Image 1 (spheres, rainbow, N blue to C red):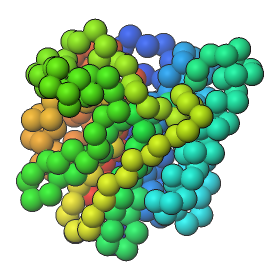
Image 2: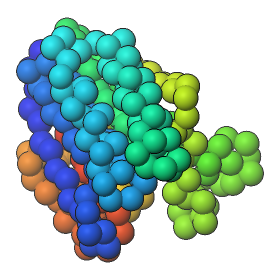
Image 3: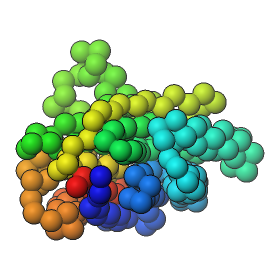
Image 4: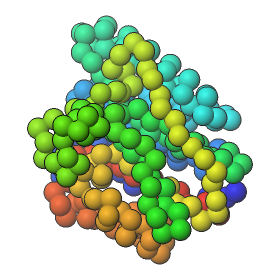
Length: 232
């Protein structure tokens, strides 16, 4: 199975630094987006450590990707307790592994993975966030998430606690599937309905440019990163 990819990252219009990091290794069937938090230097470090660790895998599998995330988690917890004076530094992470005809999405936090198949967009991941927990508990309607005062609070991140739980979903990949990995700088600005329309366009580079342009037109309040992967 071959791949066509497009990758974009932008600091946005309100942040001086880009704390996102991105990995695209079609030769290994591995892609990832990490959204660092903790401020400049800390956020940069956390997301960069994730991408560097995953990029060093010679034969990535869901198991080795999860293991690397846990290794980085331990290192970030130690750094936060020492060099960063008890400050929590961390990063969300979402990764896509495609081996033979099987795909797996692994994630921690609210960076997302979507799959477009036969004109239908499916969100593969489920946010590890406070607002998602409120929605699940029936205490918040999905259309009330946008603008909620706790919309940026994640409940799980690499580096946030001693024990990291990595969620995994997957299935069979088919020729023509289109995967999107994105930080919340995109998904909080562009709706799922709009994503479904855009992803049916022609040319991954054009689609990627259009998504970044739309985010910037709407103020781009956060760093924004996306990866598009089409199976061939």
